[in-house]
Length: 634
Image (cartoon, rainbow, N blue to C red; front, side, top):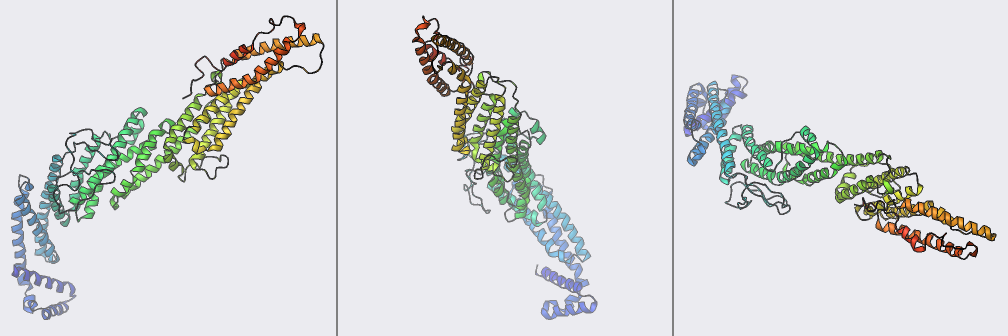
Protein backbone atom coordinates (compact mmCIF):
# COMPACT_ATOMS: atom_id res chain seq x y z
CA UNK A 1 0.00 0.00 0.00
CA UNK A 2 2.92 2.36 0.79
CA UNK A 3 4.44 1.61 -2.61
CA UNK A 4 1.11 2.21 -4.30
CA UNK A 5 0.77 5.53 -2.46
CA UNK A 6 4.22 6.69 -3.58
CA UNK A 7 3.36 5.81 -7.17
CA UNK A 8 0.25 7.98 -6.95
CA UNK A 9 2.29 10.82 -5.50
CA UNK A 10 4.86 10.64 -8.32
CA UNK A 11 2.08 10.46 -10.87
CA UNK A 12 0.50 13.61 -9.46
CA UNK A 13 3.86 15.44 -9.59
CA UNK A 14 4.37 14.47 -13.23
CA UNK A 15 0.83 15.57 -14.03
CA UNK A 16 1.39 19.01 -12.44
CA UNK A 17 4.64 19.52 -14.32
CA UNK A 18 3.09 18.49 -17.59
CA UNK A 19 0.05 20.71 -17.07
CA UNK A 20 1.89 23.86 -15.98
CA UNK A 21 4.86 23.57 -18.30
CA UNK A 22 4.26 25.25 -21.64
CA UNK A 23 7.38 23.56 -23.13
CA UNK A 24 9.88 20.88 -22.21
CA UNK A 25 12.32 23.31 -20.56
CA UNK A 26 9.60 24.69 -18.25
CA UNK A 27 8.47 21.18 -17.34
CA UNK A 28 12.06 20.21 -16.49
CA UNK A 29 12.37 23.29 -14.26
CA UNK A 30 9.20 22.34 -12.36
CA UNK A 31 10.46 18.77 -11.91
CA UNK A 32 13.78 20.15 -10.59
CA UNK A 33 11.85 22.21 -8.02
CA UNK A 34 9.99 19.10 -6.85
CA UNK A 35 13.31 17.18 -6.62
CA UNK A 36 14.91 19.87 -4.46
CA UNK A 37 11.79 19.99 -2.21
CA UNK A 38 11.55 16.26 -1.38
CA UNK A 39 13.95 13.40 -1.96
CA UNK A 40 11.15 11.18 -3.08
CA UNK A 41 10.87 13.39 -6.16
CA UNK A 42 14.33 12.50 -7.52
CA UNK A 43 14.96 13.26 -11.17
CA UNK A 44 15.45 9.55 -11.78
CA UNK A 45 12.05 8.63 -10.35
CA UNK A 46 10.29 11.56 -11.97
CA UNK A 47 11.97 10.93 -15.27
CA UNK A 48 10.71 7.36 -15.37
CA UNK A 49 7.18 8.42 -16.20
CA UNK A 50 6.79 6.19 -19.21
CA UNK A 51 8.17 3.21 -17.33
CA UNK A 52 5.96 3.82 -14.19
CA UNK A 53 2.69 4.44 -16.04
CA UNK A 54 2.00 0.72 -16.63
CA UNK A 55 2.72 0.02 -12.95
CA UNK A 56 0.26 2.81 -11.84
CA UNK A 57 -2.50 1.58 -14.14
CA UNK A 58 -1.87 -1.93 -13.01
CA UNK A 59 -2.43 -0.90 -9.42
CA UNK A 60 -5.69 0.88 -10.37
CA UNK A 61 -6.83 -2.10 -12.42
CA UNK A 62 -6.07 -4.42 -9.54
CA UNK A 63 -8.15 -2.27 -7.18
CA UNK A 64 -11.05 -2.08 -9.65
CA UNK A 65 -10.96 -5.82 -10.25
CA UNK A 66 -11.25 -6.45 -6.53
CA UNK A 67 -14.09 -3.93 -6.14
CA UNK A 68 -15.87 -5.32 -9.21
CA UNK A 69 -15.80 -8.79 -7.69
CA UNK A 70 -17.13 -7.54 -4.35
CA UNK A 71 -19.82 -5.23 -5.73
CA UNK A 72 -21.04 -7.50 -8.52
CA UNK A 73 -21.99 -10.28 -6.13
CA UNK A 74 -24.34 -7.89 -4.32
CA UNK A 75 -25.66 -6.28 -7.51
CA UNK A 76 -26.60 -9.74 -8.80
CA UNK A 77 -28.04 -10.96 -5.49
CA UNK A 78 -31.63 -12.26 -5.75
CA UNK A 79 -32.50 -11.36 -2.17
CA UNK A 80 -32.64 -7.99 -0.36
CA UNK A 81 -29.13 -7.03 0.69
CA UNK A 82 -30.44 -5.21 3.76
CA UNK A 83 -32.02 -8.38 5.06
CA UNK A 84 -28.55 -9.16 6.44
CA UNK A 85 -26.66 -6.43 8.28
CA UNK A 86 -23.28 -7.99 7.44
CA UNK A 87 -24.05 -7.94 3.72
CA UNK A 88 -25.32 -4.34 3.80
CA UNK A 89 -22.21 -3.18 5.70
CA UNK A 90 -19.88 -4.96 3.29
CA UNK A 91 -21.73 -3.54 0.29
CA UNK A 92 -21.51 0.01 1.64
CA UNK A 93 -17.79 -0.44 2.44
CA UNK A 94 -17.13 -1.54 -1.14
CA UNK A 95 -19.03 1.49 -2.46
CA UNK A 96 -17.05 3.78 -0.13
CA UNK A 97 -13.79 2.37 -1.50
CA UNK A 98 -15.01 2.76 -5.07
CA UNK A 99 -15.98 6.38 -4.42
CA UNK A 100 -12.56 7.07 -2.89
CA UNK A 101 -10.76 5.37 -5.79
CA UNK A 102 -12.58 7.45 -8.39
CA UNK A 103 -11.95 10.61 -6.39
CA UNK A 104 -8.21 9.92 -5.98
CA UNK A 105 -7.56 8.90 -9.59
CA UNK A 106 -9.71 11.51 -11.34
CA UNK A 107 -6.86 14.13 -11.37
CA UNK A 108 -4.81 11.65 -13.48
CA UNK A 109 -7.56 11.03 -16.00
CA UNK A 110 -5.54 12.91 -18.66
CA UNK A 111 -3.60 9.72 -18.95
CA UNK A 112 -5.50 7.62 -21.46
CA UNK A 113 -4.98 4.35 -19.64
CA UNK A 114 -6.13 5.90 -16.35
CA UNK A 115 -9.14 7.40 -18.14
CA UNK A 116 -10.11 3.99 -19.47
CA UNK A 117 -9.90 2.54 -15.97
CA UNK A 118 -11.98 5.35 -14.55
CA UNK A 119 -14.66 4.80 -17.20
CA UNK A 120 -14.88 1.19 -16.02
CA UNK A 121 -15.08 2.46 -12.44
CA UNK A 122 -17.95 4.79 -13.35
CA UNK A 123 -19.85 1.90 -14.97
CA UNK A 124 -19.36 -0.14 -11.84
CA UNK A 125 -20.53 2.80 -9.76
CA UNK A 126 -23.67 3.11 -11.84
CA UNK A 127 -24.47 -0.56 -11.35
CA UNK A 128 -23.97 -0.16 -7.61
CA UNK A 129 -26.20 2.92 -7.53
CA UNK A 130 -28.98 1.14 -9.40
CA UNK A 131 -28.91 -1.63 -6.81
CA UNK A 132 -28.75 0.90 -3.96
CA UNK A 133 -31.78 2.64 -5.45
CA UNK A 134 -33.71 -0.65 -5.46
CA UNK A 135 -32.68 -1.37 -1.89
CA UNK A 136 -33.67 2.18 -0.87
CA UNK A 137 -37.10 1.77 -2.43
CA UNK A 138 -37.58 -1.61 -0.82
CA UNK A 139 -36.67 -0.28 2.62
CA UNK A 140 -39.10 2.64 2.31
CA UNK A 141 -41.93 0.39 1.15
CA UNK A 142 -41.34 -2.32 3.76
CA UNK A 143 -41.00 0.27 6.50
CA UNK A 144 -44.24 1.95 5.45
CA UNK A 145 -46.10 -1.35 5.60
CA UNK A 146 -44.86 -2.08 9.10
CA UNK A 147 -46.14 1.26 10.40
CA UNK A 148 -49.24 1.64 8.21
CA UNK A 149 -51.35 4.62 9.15
CA UNK A 150 -54.43 2.82 10.45
CA UNK A 151 -54.77 4.40 13.86
CA UNK A 152 -56.91 7.08 15.42
CA UNK A 153 -55.18 10.38 16.09
CA UNK A 154 -56.37 13.05 18.46
CA UNK A 155 -55.32 16.60 19.09
CA UNK A 156 -55.49 18.55 22.31
CA UNK A 157 -56.81 21.61 20.55
CA UNK A 158 -59.24 20.01 18.12
CA UNK A 159 -60.68 16.68 19.09
CA UNK A 160 -62.71 16.22 15.92
CA UNK A 161 -59.63 15.83 13.72
CA UNK A 162 -59.25 12.06 13.41
CA UNK A 163 -58.68 9.34 10.92
CA UNK A 164 -61.81 7.27 10.67
CA UNK A 165 -60.16 3.90 10.15
CA UNK A 166 -58.06 1.84 12.51
CA UNK A 167 -57.91 0.38 16.00
CA UNK A 168 -58.72 2.87 18.74
CA UNK A 169 -56.60 0.95 21.25
CA UNK A 170 -53.39 1.16 19.24
CA UNK A 171 -51.56 4.44 19.86
CA UNK A 172 -49.18 6.20 17.55
CA UNK A 173 -45.50 6.45 18.52
CA UNK A 174 -44.62 9.90 19.82
CA UNK A 175 -41.52 12.00 19.31
CA UNK A 176 -38.98 11.41 22.04
CA UNK A 177 -39.97 7.77 22.64
CA UNK A 178 -37.67 4.86 21.94
CA UNK A 179 -33.90 4.61 21.59
CA UNK A 180 -31.43 7.39 20.96
CA UNK A 181 -30.75 8.01 17.29
CA UNK A 182 -27.66 9.12 15.47
CA UNK A 183 -29.82 11.67 13.67
CA UNK A 184 -31.46 14.48 15.72
CA UNK A 185 -35.23 14.39 16.03
CA UNK A 186 -37.61 17.35 15.78
CA UNK A 187 -40.08 18.43 18.44
CA UNK A 188 -43.88 18.03 18.06
CA UNK A 189 -45.65 20.82 16.24
CA UNK A 190 -47.91 23.60 17.48
CA UNK A 191 -51.06 22.64 19.33
CA UNK A 192 -51.07 19.10 18.02
CA UNK A 193 -49.56 16.51 20.28
CA UNK A 194 -48.53 13.92 17.72
CA UNK A 195 -46.09 13.55 14.90
CA UNK A 196 -46.19 10.36 12.89
CA UNK A 197 -43.08 8.20 12.90
CA UNK A 198 -43.91 6.76 9.51
CA UNK A 199 -40.83 4.48 9.35
CA UNK A 200 -39.04 2.48 12.06
CA UNK A 201 -35.94 4.08 13.52
CA UNK A 202 -33.63 1.33 12.23
CA UNK A 203 -35.00 1.70 8.71
CA UNK A 204 -34.45 5.45 8.83
CA UNK A 205 -30.79 4.95 9.76
CA UNK A 206 -30.33 2.44 6.91
CA UNK A 207 -31.91 4.86 4.46
CA UNK A 208 -29.63 7.62 5.72
CA UNK A 209 -26.53 5.51 5.07
CA UNK A 210 -27.71 4.74 1.53
CA UNK A 211 -28.62 8.39 0.87
CA UNK A 212 -25.15 9.56 1.93
CA UNK A 213 -23.50 7.26 -0.62
CA UNK A 214 -25.87 8.12 -3.44
CA UNK A 215 -25.49 11.88 -2.91
CA UNK A 216 -21.69 11.59 -2.64
CA UNK A 217 -21.60 9.54 -5.84
CA UNK A 218 -23.61 12.20 -7.69
CA UNK A 219 -26.93 10.33 -7.62
CA UNK A 220 -28.71 12.66 -5.22
CA UNK A 221 -31.59 13.46 -7.58
CA UNK A 222 -32.20 9.77 -8.23
CA UNK A 223 -32.27 9.14 -4.50
CA UNK A 224 -34.70 12.01 -3.92
CA UNK A 225 -36.92 10.78 -6.73
CA UNK A 226 -37.28 7.22 -5.44
CA UNK A 227 -37.83 8.47 -1.91
CA UNK A 228 -40.47 11.03 -2.90
CA UNK A 229 -42.34 8.61 -5.18
CA UNK A 230 -42.82 6.17 -2.28
CA UNK A 231 -43.71 8.73 0.37
CA UNK A 232 -46.01 10.61 -2.00
CA UNK A 233 -48.22 7.52 -2.22
CA UNK A 234 -48.42 7.42 1.57
CA UNK A 235 -49.64 11.02 1.72
CA UNK A 236 -52.18 10.54 -1.03
CA UNK A 237 -53.55 7.46 0.69
CA UNK A 238 -53.76 9.32 4.01
CA UNK A 239 -55.75 12.18 2.46
CA UNK A 240 -58.00 9.68 0.73
CA UNK A 241 -58.77 8.02 4.07
CA UNK A 242 -59.75 11.41 5.41
CA UNK A 243 -62.34 11.60 2.64
CA UNK A 244 -60.63 14.19 0.42
CA UNK A 245 -61.39 13.37 -3.18
CA UNK A 246 -59.10 14.19 -6.09
CA UNK A 247 -61.24 16.75 -7.87
CA UNK A 248 -60.16 19.14 -10.57
CA UNK A 249 -61.17 22.79 -10.37
CA UNK A 250 -63.76 22.15 -13.08
CA UNK A 251 -65.20 19.17 -11.19
CA UNK A 252 -65.48 21.20 -7.99
CA UNK A 253 -67.34 23.99 -9.79
CA UNK A 254 -69.77 21.49 -11.34
CA UNK A 255 -70.55 19.84 -8.00
CA UNK A 256 -74.05 20.71 -6.64
CA UNK A 257 -73.77 23.12 -3.73
CA UNK A 258 -75.27 20.76 -1.15
CA UNK A 259 -72.70 18.10 -2.06
CA UNK A 260 -69.95 20.71 -2.11
CA UNK A 261 -70.83 21.76 1.43
CA UNK A 262 -70.02 18.21 2.56
CA UNK A 263 -66.81 18.28 0.54
CA UNK A 264 -65.80 21.53 2.25
CA UNK A 265 -66.23 19.91 5.67
CA UNK A 266 -63.97 17.05 4.60
CA UNK A 267 -61.51 19.52 3.07
CA UNK A 268 -61.21 21.49 6.33
CA UNK A 269 -60.53 18.30 8.26
CA UNK A 270 -58.02 17.04 5.70
CA UNK A 271 -56.19 20.37 5.35
CA UNK A 272 -55.72 20.65 9.10
CA UNK A 273 -54.42 17.12 9.46
CA UNK A 274 -52.15 17.52 6.43
CA UNK A 275 -50.59 20.84 7.43
CA UNK A 276 -50.39 20.15 11.16
CA UNK A 277 -49.60 16.45 11.28
CA UNK A 278 -48.78 14.78 7.95
CA UNK A 279 -46.53 17.42 6.35
CA UNK A 280 -44.52 18.18 9.51
CA UNK A 281 -44.05 14.44 9.97
CA UNK A 282 -42.77 14.15 6.41
CA UNK A 283 -40.46 17.11 7.01
CA UNK A 284 -39.08 15.39 10.07
CA UNK A 285 -38.63 12.12 8.19
CA UNK A 286 -36.82 13.85 5.32
CA UNK A 287 -34.50 15.63 7.72
CA UNK A 288 -33.60 12.32 9.35
CA UNK A 289 -33.14 10.31 6.17
CA UNK A 290 -31.13 13.10 4.51
CA UNK A 291 -29.42 14.38 7.66
CA UNK A 292 -26.44 16.54 6.67
CA UNK A 293 -27.71 16.66 3.08
CA UNK A 294 -29.95 19.71 3.32
CA UNK A 295 -30.43 20.27 -0.40
CA UNK A 296 -31.49 16.66 -0.97
CA UNK A 297 -33.78 16.84 2.06
CA UNK A 298 -35.48 20.01 0.82
CA UNK A 299 -35.91 18.70 -2.70
CA UNK A 300 -37.29 15.38 -1.48
CA UNK A 301 -39.75 17.02 0.90
CA UNK A 302 -41.03 19.33 -1.82
CA UNK A 303 -41.52 16.40 -4.21
CA UNK A 304 -43.32 14.39 -1.52
CA UNK A 305 -45.75 17.12 -0.51
CA UNK A 306 -46.22 19.05 -3.73
CA UNK A 307 -49.02 16.95 -5.19
CA UNK A 308 -51.06 16.76 -1.98
CA UNK A 309 -50.54 20.47 -1.27
CA UNK A 310 -51.65 21.45 -4.77
CA UNK A 311 -54.68 19.18 -4.37
CA UNK A 312 -55.62 20.99 -1.16
CA UNK A 313 -55.01 24.45 -2.61
CA UNK A 314 -56.80 23.73 -5.89
CA UNK A 315 -59.96 22.85 -4.00
CA UNK A 316 -59.83 26.13 -2.09
CA UNK A 317 -59.13 27.98 -5.33
CA UNK A 318 -62.12 26.34 -7.03
CA UNK A 319 -64.34 27.47 -4.15
CA UNK A 320 -62.91 30.99 -4.39
CA UNK A 321 -63.51 31.43 -8.11
CA UNK A 322 -66.91 29.73 -8.13
CA UNK A 323 -70.38 31.23 -7.86
CA UNK A 324 -70.76 34.22 -5.56
CA UNK A 325 -74.32 33.49 -4.62
CA UNK A 326 -75.00 34.91 -1.12
CA UNK A 327 -75.91 31.54 0.40
CA UNK A 328 -72.33 30.37 -0.20
CA UNK A 329 -70.86 32.97 2.13
CA UNK A 330 -70.72 30.89 5.28
CA UNK A 331 -68.91 27.89 3.83
CA UNK A 332 -66.50 30.15 1.98
CA UNK A 333 -65.85 31.88 5.30
CA UNK A 334 -65.04 28.46 6.75
CA UNK A 335 -62.52 27.82 3.97
CA UNK A 336 -61.05 31.32 4.33
CA UNK A 337 -60.64 30.96 8.10
CA UNK A 338 -59.16 27.48 7.81
CA UNK A 339 -56.58 28.62 5.26
CA UNK A 340 -55.82 31.75 7.30
CA UNK A 341 -55.25 29.70 10.42
CA UNK A 342 -52.94 27.38 8.46
CA UNK A 343 -50.76 30.14 7.00
CA UNK A 344 -48.30 29.82 9.90
CA UNK A 345 -48.00 26.12 9.12
CA UNK A 346 -47.39 26.91 5.45
CA UNK A 347 -44.64 29.33 6.48
CA UNK A 348 -42.94 26.96 8.93
CA UNK A 349 -43.33 23.65 7.08
CA UNK A 350 -42.55 25.00 3.61
CA UNK A 351 -39.71 27.27 4.68
CA UNK A 352 -37.03 26.24 2.16
CA UNK A 353 -36.37 27.63 -1.31
CA UNK A 354 -37.84 24.63 -3.12
CA UNK A 355 -41.23 25.16 -1.42
CA UNK A 356 -41.39 28.91 -1.93
CA UNK A 357 -43.93 28.54 -4.75
CA UNK A 358 -46.24 26.54 -2.45
CA UNK A 359 -46.15 29.26 0.21
CA UNK A 360 -46.84 31.93 -2.40
CA UNK A 361 -49.69 29.93 -3.92
CA UNK A 362 -51.31 29.44 -0.52
CA UNK A 363 -51.16 33.18 0.15
CA UNK A 364 -52.57 34.00 -3.31
CA UNK A 365 -55.53 31.64 -2.90
CA UNK A 366 -56.22 32.90 0.62
CA UNK A 367 -56.44 36.45 -0.73
CA UNK A 368 -58.63 35.21 -3.56
CA UNK A 369 -61.04 33.78 -0.99
CA UNK A 370 -61.17 37.24 0.60
CA UNK A 371 -62.03 38.72 -2.78
CA UNK A 372 -64.77 36.10 -3.16
CA UNK A 373 -66.28 37.10 0.21
CA UNK A 374 -66.32 40.75 -0.79
CA UNK A 375 -67.83 39.73 -4.11
CA UNK A 376 -70.62 37.88 -2.30
CA UNK A 377 -71.54 41.05 -0.42
CA UNK A 378 -71.59 42.94 -3.71
CA UNK A 379 -73.95 40.28 -5.04
CA UNK A 380 -76.13 40.71 -1.95
CA UNK A 381 -76.29 44.43 -2.66
CA UNK A 382 -77.35 43.71 -6.24
CA UNK A 383 -79.96 41.23 -5.03
CA UNK A 384 -81.48 43.88 -2.74
CA UNK A 385 -81.38 46.63 -5.36
CA UNK A 386 -82.90 44.45 -8.06
CA UNK A 387 -85.65 42.89 -5.95
CA UNK A 388 -88.78 44.12 -7.73
CA UNK A 389 -91.68 46.01 -6.15
CA UNK A 390 -94.44 44.03 -7.83
CA UNK A 391 -96.77 42.24 -5.44
CA UNK A 392 -97.54 43.87 -2.08
CA UNK A 393 -97.23 41.82 1.09
CA UNK A 394 -100.80 41.16 2.37
CA UNK A 395 -101.78 43.38 5.27
CA UNK A 396 -98.57 45.43 5.17
CA UNK A 397 -96.66 42.68 6.93
CA UNK A 398 -93.00 41.78 7.01
CA UNK A 399 -91.46 41.51 3.56
CA UNK A 400 -89.44 38.33 2.83
CA UNK A 401 -86.42 40.35 1.73
CA UNK A 402 -86.32 42.12 5.12
CA UNK A 403 -86.33 38.84 6.97
CA UNK A 404 -83.76 37.32 4.61
CA UNK A 405 -81.31 40.23 4.67
CA UNK A 406 -81.45 40.80 8.43
CA UNK A 407 -81.05 37.15 9.36
CA UNK A 408 -78.30 36.86 6.77
CA UNK A 409 -76.39 39.80 8.24
CA UNK A 410 -76.88 38.55 11.81
CA UNK A 411 -75.45 35.18 10.84
CA UNK A 412 -72.58 36.83 8.95
CA UNK A 413 -71.69 38.96 11.97
CA UNK A 414 -70.94 35.82 13.97
CA UNK A 415 -67.77 35.87 11.89
CA UNK A 416 -67.21 39.54 12.58
CA UNK A 417 -63.48 39.24 13.26
CA UNK A 418 -62.93 37.49 9.95
CA UNK A 419 -65.11 39.92 8.02
CA UNK A 420 -63.32 42.88 9.60
CA UNK A 421 -60.09 41.38 8.27
CA UNK A 422 -61.59 40.85 4.82
CA UNK A 423 -63.04 44.36 4.53
CA UNK A 424 -59.95 46.06 5.90
CA UNK A 425 -58.03 44.75 2.91
CA UNK A 426 -56.75 47.55 0.70
CA UNK A 427 -59.12 46.58 -2.13
CA UNK A 428 -62.18 46.23 0.09
CA UNK A 429 -65.31 48.37 -0.17
CA UNK A 430 -63.79 50.64 -2.81
CA UNK A 431 -67.11 50.37 -4.66
CA UNK A 432 -69.12 51.76 -1.79
CA UNK A 433 -70.33 55.35 -1.57
CA UNK A 434 -69.92 57.24 1.65
CA UNK A 435 -72.68 56.67 4.15
CA UNK A 436 -73.03 59.71 6.40
CA UNK A 437 -69.78 60.76 8.08
CA UNK A 438 -68.11 57.46 8.94
CA UNK A 439 -64.48 58.41 8.55
CA UNK A 440 -63.68 56.81 11.92
CA UNK A 441 -65.78 53.68 11.32
CA UNK A 442 -64.37 50.35 10.29
CA UNK A 443 -64.75 49.15 6.72
CA UNK A 444 -67.19 46.51 7.87
CA UNK A 445 -69.32 49.11 9.66
CA UNK A 446 -69.50 51.12 6.44
CA UNK A 447 -70.37 47.96 4.52
CA UNK A 448 -73.22 47.07 6.89
CA UNK A 449 -74.57 50.63 6.91
CA UNK A 450 -74.55 50.67 3.12
CA UNK A 451 -76.52 47.42 2.92
CA UNK A 452 -79.03 48.75 5.44
CA UNK A 453 -79.45 51.90 3.35
CA UNK A 454 -80.07 49.82 0.22
CA UNK A 455 -82.63 47.71 2.08
CA UNK A 456 -84.46 50.80 3.37
CA UNK A 457 -84.58 52.32 -0.11
CA UNK A 458 -85.93 49.09 -1.54
CA UNK A 459 -88.63 48.88 1.16
CA UNK A 460 -89.67 52.48 0.57
CA UNK A 461 -90.12 51.71 -3.12
CA UNK A 462 -92.20 48.65 -2.21
CA UNK A 463 -94.38 50.68 0.16
CA UNK A 464 -95.48 52.88 -2.75
CA UNK A 465 -97.44 50.04 -4.34
CA UNK A 466 -100.03 50.19 -1.50
CA UNK A 467 -102.95 52.40 -2.52
CA UNK A 468 -103.87 53.20 1.08
CA UNK A 469 -101.31 55.61 2.60
CA UNK A 470 -102.06 54.25 6.07
CA UNK A 471 -101.18 50.73 4.94
CA UNK A 472 -97.98 52.10 3.42
CA UNK A 473 -96.98 53.39 6.87
CA UNK A 474 -97.94 50.10 8.54
CA UNK A 475 -95.71 48.26 6.08
CA UNK A 476 -92.77 50.58 6.77
CA UNK A 477 -93.45 50.44 10.52
CA UNK A 478 -93.43 46.63 10.49
CA UNK A 479 -90.26 46.27 8.49
CA UNK A 480 -88.37 49.08 10.22
CA UNK A 481 -89.29 47.69 13.65
CA UNK A 482 -87.99 44.27 12.61
CA UNK A 483 -84.75 45.79 11.33
CA UNK A 484 -84.14 47.73 14.54
CA UNK A 485 -84.80 44.66 16.68
CA UNK A 486 -82.39 42.51 14.69
CA UNK A 487 -79.72 45.20 14.85
CA UNK A 488 -80.13 45.80 18.57
CA UNK A 489 -79.92 42.10 19.48
CA UNK A 490 -76.78 41.25 17.51
CA UNK A 491 -73.27 42.31 16.56
CA UNK A 492 -74.89 44.65 14.06
CA UNK A 493 -75.71 46.94 16.97
CA UNK A 494 -72.07 47.53 17.85
CA UNK A 495 -71.15 47.86 14.18
CA UNK A 496 -73.85 50.41 13.30
CA UNK A 497 -73.74 52.20 16.66
CA UNK A 498 -76.22 53.66 19.11
CA UNK A 499 -76.86 56.72 16.96
CA UNK A 500 -78.04 54.52 14.11
CA UNK A 501 -80.38 52.63 16.43
CA UNK A 502 -81.82 55.86 17.90
CA UNK A 503 -82.32 57.35 14.43
CA UNK A 504 -84.19 54.32 13.14
CA UNK A 505 -86.23 53.89 16.31
CA UNK A 506 -87.38 57.47 15.76
CA UNK A 507 -88.33 56.52 12.21
CA UNK A 508 -90.57 53.74 13.53
CA UNK A 509 -92.31 56.25 15.82
CA UNK A 510 -92.77 58.65 12.92
CA UNK A 511 -94.36 55.90 10.82
CA UNK A 512 -96.70 55.28 13.76
CA UNK A 513 -97.67 58.94 13.91
CA UNK A 514 -98.15 59.07 10.14
CA UNK A 515 -100.37 55.98 10.26
CA UNK A 516 -102.63 57.50 12.91
CA UNK A 517 -102.83 60.79 11.07
CA UNK A 518 -103.66 59.30 7.68
CA UNK A 519 -106.06 56.66 8.96
CA UNK A 520 -107.93 58.18 11.93
CA UNK A 521 -107.93 61.94 11.32
CA UNK A 522 -111.19 61.67 9.38
CA UNK A 523 -112.83 59.72 12.22
CA UNK A 524 -111.64 62.12 14.89
CA UNK A 525 -112.76 65.03 12.72
CA UNK A 526 -116.41 64.03 12.78
CA UNK A 527 -116.33 63.81 16.58
CA UNK A 528 -115.32 67.43 16.92
CA UNK A 529 -118.13 69.72 18.05
CA UNK A 530 -118.50 72.98 16.20
CA UNK A 531 -117.89 76.06 18.29
CA UNK A 532 -120.35 78.94 18.45
CA UNK A 533 -124.07 79.00 18.83
CA UNK A 534 -126.22 77.02 16.40
CA UNK A 535 -129.94 76.91 16.24
CA UNK A 536 -131.17 73.92 18.16
CA UNK A 537 -132.61 72.20 15.12
CA UNK A 538 -129.35 72.73 13.20
CA UNK A 539 -127.24 71.42 16.09
CA UNK A 540 -129.38 68.31 16.45
CA UNK A 541 -129.19 67.58 12.75
CA UNK A 542 -125.40 68.12 12.71
CA UNK A 543 -124.81 65.80 15.66
CA UNK A 544 -126.99 63.09 14.18
CA UNK A 545 -125.09 63.39 10.90
CA UNK A 546 -121.71 63.29 12.64
CA UNK A 547 -122.61 60.19 14.65
CA UNK A 548 -123.85 58.49 11.52
CA UNK A 549 -120.58 59.30 9.70
CA UNK A 550 -118.53 58.12 12.69
CA UNK A 551 -120.27 54.76 12.63
CA UNK A 552 -119.69 54.43 8.89
CA UNK A 553 -116.01 55.46 9.02
CA UNK A 554 -115.30 53.41 12.12
CA UNK A 555 -116.88 50.29 10.64
CA UNK A 556 -114.96 50.67 7.39
CA UNK A 557 -111.62 51.18 9.11
CA UNK A 558 -112.12 48.30 11.55
CA UNK A 559 -113.23 45.97 8.80
CA UNK A 560 -110.22 46.87 6.67
CA UNK A 561 -107.56 47.09 9.35
CA UNK A 562 -108.57 43.92 11.12
CA UNK A 563 -106.92 42.21 8.13
CA UNK A 564 -103.79 44.29 8.38
CA UNK A 565 -100.76 42.80 10.10
CA UNK A 566 -98.52 44.05 12.88
CA UNK A 567 -96.08 41.20 13.51
CA UNK A 568 -94.64 42.45 16.80
CA UNK A 569 -96.82 41.95 19.88
CA UNK A 570 -95.41 44.97 21.66
CA UNK A 571 -95.83 47.23 18.64
CA UNK A 572 -99.39 46.00 18.13
CA UNK A 573 -100.24 46.78 21.76
CA UNK A 574 -98.60 50.20 21.48
CA UNK A 575 -100.69 51.01 18.42
CA UNK A 576 -103.94 49.96 20.11
CA UNK A 577 -103.19 51.82 23.32
CA UNK A 578 -102.26 54.98 21.44
CA UNK A 579 -105.39 54.70 19.33
CA UNK A 580 -107.63 54.14 22.34
CA UNK A 581 -106.10 57.19 24.04
CA UNK A 582 -107.07 59.54 21.24
CA UNK A 583 -110.33 57.91 20.14
CA UNK A 584 -112.12 56.91 23.34
CA UNK A 585 -112.00 60.32 25.05
CA UNK A 586 -113.21 62.08 21.89
CA UNK A 587 -116.02 59.53 21.45
CA UNK A 588 -117.03 59.68 25.12
CA UNK A 589 -117.15 63.47 24.99
CA UNK A 590 -119.23 63.46 21.83
CA UNK A 591 -121.69 60.86 23.15
CA UNK A 592 -121.99 62.76 26.41
CA UNK A 593 -122.92 65.94 24.55
CA UNK A 594 -125.24 64.01 22.25
CA UNK A 595 -127.13 62.47 25.14
CA UNK A 596 -127.62 65.90 26.73
CA UNK A 597 -129.61 67.21 23.76
CA UNK A 598 -133.30 66.74 24.66
CA UNK A 599 -134.53 67.46 21.17
CA UNK A 600 -132.96 64.24 19.89
CA UNK A 601 -135.42 62.09 21.76
CA UNK A 602 -134.47 58.40 21.97
CA UNK A 603 -130.70 58.30 21.83
CA UNK A 604 -130.15 54.52 21.68
CA UNK A 605 -131.30 54.23 18.10
CA UNK A 606 -128.45 56.55 17.03
CA UNK A 607 -125.68 55.28 19.36
CA UNK A 608 -124.33 52.08 17.81
CA UNK A 609 -121.28 51.56 20.02
CA UNK A 610 -120.68 51.81 23.72
CA UNK A 611 -117.17 52.63 24.94
CA UNK A 612 -116.50 48.96 25.59
CA UNK A 613 -117.54 48.14 22.03
CA UNK A 614 -115.13 50.72 20.64
CA UNK A 615 -112.31 49.28 22.73
CA UNK A 616 -113.13 45.73 21.66
CA UNK A 617 -113.12 46.72 18.00
CA UNK A 618 -109.75 48.41 18.42
CA UNK A 619 -108.36 45.24 19.99
CA UNK A 620 -109.42 43.27 16.92
CA UNK A 621 -107.17 45.36 14.66
CA UNK A 622 -103.88 44.17 13.09
CA UNK A 623 -104.43 40.44 13.48
CA UNK A 624 -104.33 39.72 9.80
CA UNK A 625 -105.95 36.38 9.11
CA UNK A 626 -105.74 35.52 12.83
CA UNK A 627 -102.32 34.01 13.37
CA UNK A 628 -100.55 35.65 10.48
CA UNK A 629 -99.66 38.68 12.56
CA UNK A 630 -96.69 36.91 14.01
CA UNK A 631 -95.68 35.37 10.71
CA UNK A 632 -92.16 36.03 9.59
CA UNK A 633 -90.83 37.09 12.95
CA UNK A 634 -87.83 34.78 12.87
